[in-house]
Image (cartoon, rainbow, N blue to C red):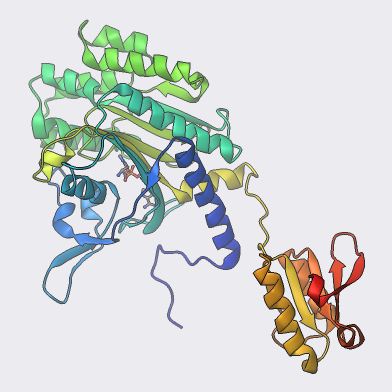
Length: 418
Ligand code: HAM
């Protein structure tokens, strides 16, 4: 038997119902904030992703040559496709853009708990708005979603920092441009790798030991008060973050958020505030993450436009919901089961099913010759509310029997009245 590729998932109907439930919550949180949905192809030209700063994501491409010899790749993330779409219509799109999407993304990763080779990633982005209020609005969307699935600030925390923190620290040591981006990508792995490995990688890109100690010291800061002690009085990073935390307080979100200088994110393009949601117990990988990326378009050959957004995978949050007993029981949406008591009544059953469907009911018509006992059990299993029986004597007098499966009550209705 041919198996499915490693790290991919099948969605049998039970799982599909749950996935749809989760996506509905993504749609609802987006709609509650006035965001519009978009989509793009899962296949893109590889060059959309070939950034040179050593990010993991660029080494994990599902890439190949198509039959015309063009280098293509399944998308590992949505942001470059979104950038491509925005760039193509930059002159005409009314700004700011508030868009969301739930694309399937593909990364050739080592599979582990909460990480697969494909995942669905809710993406929420704002383009054309440089104010920090956009970043605050994104955090509000995340929290709206968390609340809608029953998670609270006791379950998780959104850790926030800014790329500008490290940019200012490294700038004072004469490290900027690519050196700065590469440093961010390396220190993002600090939780996963031993300190010696991180130190080695930093020295390989030319960071001296004094700078390494300074980086480590700054990244261990966990409060804005401590942060300002380590930055210049005029620090832009500090003043932006202070404003962001005040705004989030106005949204009533203070208990959901924490300053954490170790949040830098592993993608090259971030330029300002960055954030990730983590489970409070620290057992799972990041639930979601994002940040401001004001200079992505110039790296793709266009004119820059301010942008901020986040990506939120479907896997880790389901792990968390499972652990907290928050996965709902969802039965199928079928309302009526229609069964003919004998083969010669099948045409009648078809007419009844059609009529009910035209009236907007969702109807499962039993297609094979089945016993009544089977029809009852089946109705129960799929969570139908009525069993509709086409019986010989009743049908002769133009009637159909309806059994309410909750109360057990039965009534005969004329075909013309249903
Ligand atoms: P990212 O941190 O690479 O960011 O991914 C965002 C989220 O996608 C992660 O926090 C996780 O929930 C999920 N995710 C990523 N890789 C996997 C995987 N292999 N298996 C399961 N889940 C995964 C980005 O992709 C950015 N493009 C997000 C963004 C949008 N930034 C601005 N706008």
